[in-house]
Length: 321
Image: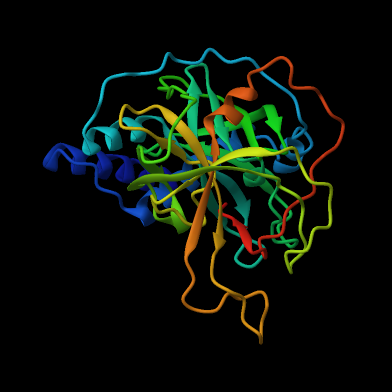
């Protein structure tokens, strides 16, 4: 009963903030508490799918989506932010803490690509190594109002491009259109959840397009796996950080041109510790191009039987889950 009362109060607080100021005001602690309480309720209703079960579904396969047509209506930055907030989700794990015994939420990011509950995010959001002491975990998605949706399945995945489609149980979802062909110099915007600071909006430019392989590496950056096919990526100047993986990167019309993937440090490594770049270092931000996301909807994407290795976060090129 106490948790139910708290959930009602949190919902009422969010409505009051928007009604009084006409602005969207984020309270990270209240938002996290609301997501956890709603997640616990879904768990009691037996609506959540275990994370391990979803991980077994991450294999290269396609799923055709009903993508929106590309928008040509230019928006002002505050309008872009509002448009992104309607479609961007906090996607992450609801897990039982081995220390305190309570439930916690660790969020990354994703965005709606089809109104029938299909969400795009990174494969490593699902596959990333977790605390081995965590025995029970589920994958959930939450919108900016704190509504929580169970992640039911992995519909499509391209493990080489580190992108996938998830199916969530929800209604009233507003998708974003996908646009191929972005050029260096275009303005771009990102809405993501870095480090538990939810719905952070940033602006920048496409610095360049590049192709590179996503070969597996060890903790020292040495290749220990078979290189992937060349993946089309964007480097952008809009800021993001760990927790931003899977976030939409859009143009000034609100079309998705990329998806947040990883960060590399451009500084030289320290002679004392080769895992740590010397200061100062420049973060190089990588985003998977929309062309790679659209490829998930291509029937030519062949089913493969392998499951990708769970990735270590201790790399020169860091995933930003």
